[in-house]
Image (tube, rainbow, N blue to C red; front, side, top):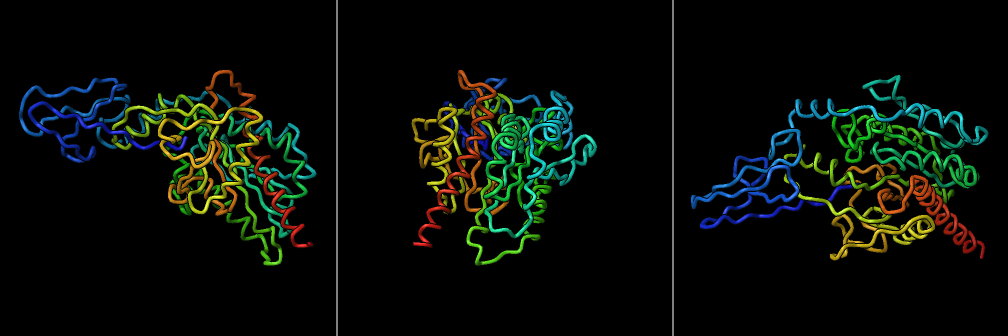
Length: 382
């Protein structure tokens, strides 16, 4: 989940008006938070500027104040290993049906918190860094480790569909960008930071920096040519989920860490896509949506016409400034980029469905570009 706008409700105290202040400043702030652990109260006095303390809605930190390093340490101490990166990811990459005649498995880094436990791998076509006249596909999964189908969907694509497109695309799949978070089922990394807000050169998380360096290295090894009209085509599909735990754990933690008030989240019921608001390829995004419909339903907008507080510009599509936000899907600067959001908690939705929805999204992206190239080829030759 990308996150939604903060909802702040001003409480007016009888006999006096209390204005909203900056939650991180010394000015009083009154926030009504119906789902918080501590109910909001108001003063019975008529003294100017009297205000209740910010309510507690998360067990770590001081309400209304950004977390200190000790608060981040407490958060990490509360996490625990819940699954195995080696068994569920690495072993599947090495033993399962990945065609070694077409693909190489390369190590592009490791996490400093435990380099032996958390090596970082990509599976790439053998021509990934060549100047062959093919468009380039990057698939990233597990940027948020708790979003299971991002990881397993990427592996499923490698095992079932990738070989069918290796002759027309240079491809790389990075199935688990944040393995510590995957094992601990967390949104953040081991330093309590969100990798999907740090995809800038020299960004603050090593997960994002490793992906960025890997992409830059591939670009530097590729000899570009203006005559290769399709070589400049870049597709990047970043695989994510929006889950019910966004409302119960991850968004409350995000707001508490920033010292901001929190009320609730409206979790979209269904699949949706996040595209870049700068010159978005809407037909491409709609084609991906149509492909995913074969597996699951698409999230409808709410009564305001929004999905996670962003206007739905087409069925199941919202747009945000991806580069400004430091999102993973901005790392390539490609034309055809999208962040998927699978909803695993919908009634009747299975893990199999979630993984297949991610595969369908990648295949839909590839098929759109193939169709576009075929049309352009016909137009060129009359």
